[in-house]
Image 1 (tube, rainbow, N blue to C red):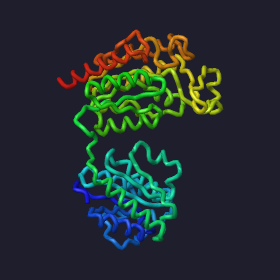
Image 2: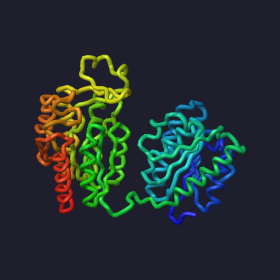
Image 3: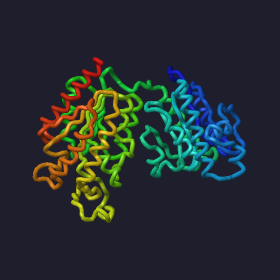
Image 4: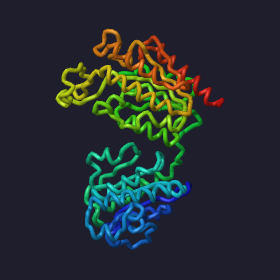
Length: 411
């Protein structure tokens, strides 16, 4: 039994799957845990246990009346409404400090609703879903959340020798995870988020070693879309003390339709949270596509580089770089925290070095000028006559970050 406070929230369609949820509830309660039952089913419940939030309450939170959902018999609408409603209920429970873990079970619909509700649960609070579709690509539904998927093997439709074993394992798993302290940090070190790519690895590794030698905890995020959006989400959850955003390439993919877009909210979290940030236009010389035949026809005249058989890099042009520069400053200009943008004048990626296939100093200069001309007065724009992957540039980034961290501590 866990000694931490709170209950395990159990999400599911108790109308069609009451028997299996009764079994899950029994196993969790037998472990000494308290439970909060949330019914996301639309029809009359078949549950034989106490339900804390019945389907009518969930539906109202989702903006509809349960009677209307039953009458319309629109499965897609019902899933959306119940997902929204469950998410709001779970969010309120989390804010009230009542949640130590969340577990759900179901087929396609039940899984969708459970994962939607789990989106409101912060990092570190365990989230597990026993699902018939766990082996499918659910990356869109999971997003950047630390959700554990567990295949149900058979349908979650009734008790049998297979599903009982898996439900017992799911119950034991969520109880064990719930017993772990939810402290985001494992120590008292200050945490720094840093973004990286293969084309900026040398810089990031050098910065990481220096910062770790100085006693900081450094967490790297691969700027592949999911990595950037996850970093942004964790910044908003207060995980980090500062951000060293070396690799902002996801902005290029967002503009040009590449495969590594982190969406329009990339580069906004540190600004909104007001924490110290050092930003570099790293790898904004490139957009990431898949195999060569996946590159849109409109870009056929561009310069390309095969980074891997399934990764095709496209060189960005001057017009795009001007947009990137303005987008960076539009974000950082709004920050109330100490902020610096550092420009590596000899190249912004591994392949944007003298002799490299993407080496275009004039195009980079458009990016740099856009940043310098549109940056607010309180944003420090610093130029370094060095390549992004040079030790000198990495050292300068660390010194800049330490300076604004000191400034933040004294403010």
